[in-house]
Amino acid sequence: MKEAYEAIKTTVLELYQKVGFQYRACFVYGSLAQGFYQPGQSDVNLLVVVENGTSIHALREAFLPVWEQYGPILQRAPGIATKDSFERHMQLFPLLARHIDKYGKQVRGSRRTLGRTTSLDTKHKVARRAGLAMTASLALTPQILIRPSDGVQADHLLRQMVRQQRQAAVGTAETPAALFHELHSTLQPLLQEAGDGWQGDPPAAPPYDVPGLLATYEKLDYLLLVVADMAAVRDYDWAGFGQQLNGLYGGVQVMTAAQLRLAIQLEQTLEYVLRNYNHKWGHDVVADLHPPAQFALRDAARFVSQVAIFDMPHAYFTAEPSEYSKLIHDFQNKLLNARLQNELLARMKFTESKQPPIPLPDRTAPPLDRIAAIFDHLDWWSAYYANQLEGSLSAYELVR
Image 1 (tube, one colour):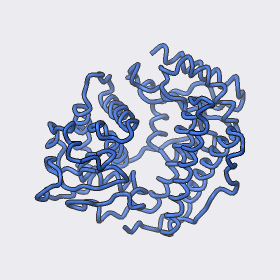
Image 2 (tube, helix red, strand yellow; image 1 turned 180 degrees about the horizontal axis):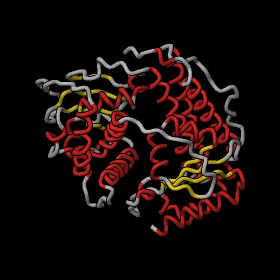
Image 3 (spheres, helix red, strand yellow; image 1 turned 120 degrees about the vertical axis):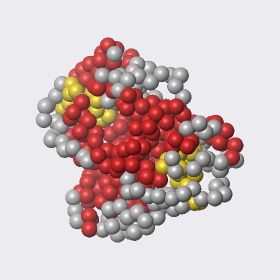
């Protein structure tokens, strides 16, 4: 733990020396701030706030020697937010804001950087956990994942969630199946309290030999298995399940009906609106859902804000210059996803069809100019949706 704090101290010092008074604050949060940090497994969660207009290239230059020395300890580059994007992100992710307010430690900077936060009701908290648990369930079947990185990330998320639940360490020998069911031993009672009481018996002749199978959905290249009770699949042979798929899917997620319904209503509304959940067999357990339209706009804003503050800074700060072309390609694709989401939402009359006023530089532009422009576009989309959320679109309801 001492090395983690040394890494934080060095990070803050290097950034402050590079950008001076443009530095506003650095927040330490997560397991390190809460006291159950696990060296070698836990990330060192940092969120740095700088003034609007601070050069992302100067920040990378300052962080490079820190990453070379402390990369294995930090595991991730810090999130980087400007004053405005930080305020938006805290509004979009109130659970994170509340966590930082309650547990976070601010390292050097203005005490007024984080504004007043409010508590969310239990239902929103459970919905967030339900959605994350669905993603973490990919760790049950790593052998069939087309993208191995999905399995690594899912296993990391699963261990992180159990570590938070225990507020204690997770052993490296503990299996994903055991951790998954430990996670659900706490989650399922919360879902029963927060859910809407959907009931149904498993239909006959299921396409897979999963106990208590209620329904299957396709979500992009993932197969979603909706089961009646997690206890029924506690001892299921997930390692052998892939033989039933014949390579048709890139991954499998496992959930209960109450879990899926709550996640869609409060946490994954945009995916539902864009019809990413394709019902294939059994009960259509989400057919009657009509979540508010503003949740879809919020999800669109969350997507670009998460990419801008966490995903792209990590990728850029830890990449070699020889990798810039791939980085630019990958994050321009994320911008394309944001544009396509906007077009679809506009067709549904939830928002207007928009795009940033200044186009991205072409391929002949210097890589650093192209990278800076991607950051600018992500920030523009985040601000656009934040303004939309303050409008009058709450009168709309989603129609499936």
